[in-house]
Length: 221
Length: 221
Image (cartoon, rainbow over all chains, first blue to last red):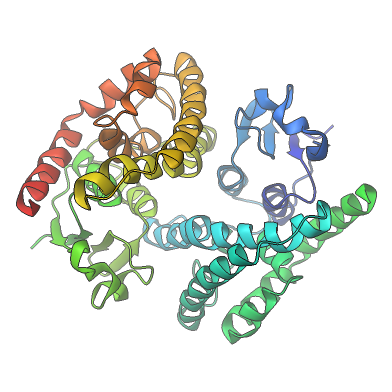
């Protein structure tokens, strides 16, 4: 049994974010499935791991964590000397990377997650109707975020600096789902954003996340 | 002129968060006022510092940052050897601190900021009416967050560990405003949360933030 356990769902964006970081580091782990459709994440034993009832929860030996972005930061720092280097250590370089990681969390993700919910989760998983007003409002918000990214990526190869870091990785799950929806047009309209997404979604560590997700989605159909 | 510049407003919660970290480190800085009532934060020259048009923006020599939590992390790490130690360096201790900092950003702040907007900003600054449905919804959300904190604070003196860190500090501005509203009852009903808030709001570095805020509010009346 691997010392690292991820309690979650291979098709949840926050779980995928954590698995992407583990794969970049080449770390072995056990995925302990949490069935969100039956509400397992809102009951014991899961809520003893995360009192907010959200996947994923994470264990590494006796360390227990939740909040996907805290977990990826832990993985990057605890396993600094193996696999892909996902953070900077110089405080100024780290500050720039951290700034763009905050932009993901506070600008990209709120709009992106609402669009993913309306355009993918509601119609495909629950057979319920998309709210077009919510879609329009959040497409406008996301477009503004992507304009900022287009400019940033004209100055820097990756969002966080000259190499791939957590600031990029954190975008992968939601972006991957949005590329399968009408929101793809917002990415396609911006050449630098498109090239950046093509680059980061082509990473072998990410292909493994998608394979695991597709397997889980196949099982759930 | 100090090498550190904070472009913002002394009564904005995000600006107060950054100034609290600077004060804990005993760092000198210039506060460059941005008048949000006239929309200065949505125009040049400010939007060259933060393309999202939100205060604060930050400069330390030639380093330019925005996003208050990225800025406080930079201050804590770049000035690690002076003033209050605001972070952990051991990856496991840091992970726990980072987890609770994420909880502030993704659970406490969304509910707390909406309550602050409805109960303090709207009636006091704009003379507009509080939306009671929004208040009820977010009081229920905040109550759940504070229940988690009450349990956490029975196991640990501070949220992030055995000493005051950024995980606590980030709560200060919104909590301080909420203590002046009817939301105070949610804090008062939880003895460990109340004691924690009494402790962290009594810090001399925080008293300086409040003095600066009160001066700014006085000038704006």
